[in-house]
Image (tube, rainbow, N blue to C red):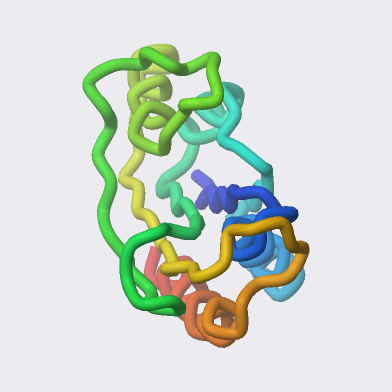
Length: 147
């Protein structure tokens, strides 16, 4: 079984692009053939099928809360409903619920998020979020190695 890494967020809204940027940088440095990396502006329903086949899913995203640049790693659980599966409101928990509901399996999952500062129109990450990226990539590498 593979490890699925999904980084998401808009690369044109400043720090919201953290997830995609982190996923793309991790993919460039990763040499483990068990890892499948997806970078997208938003979570897509088809990721549920990929998740159902994974040993672990790691989501990468920016968050509004916290001091800019602070990293949070937490376990995720599937939501109670797949409502919103085919809308712009697809969350990691709903995606996991869809994997369980549609494909009969929901893997363990976690979220690595970084608190952002600037979510305005920009193709650049803020200095605080950019500075957090190497630590996030190292933590992700550790997670993959330990799985």
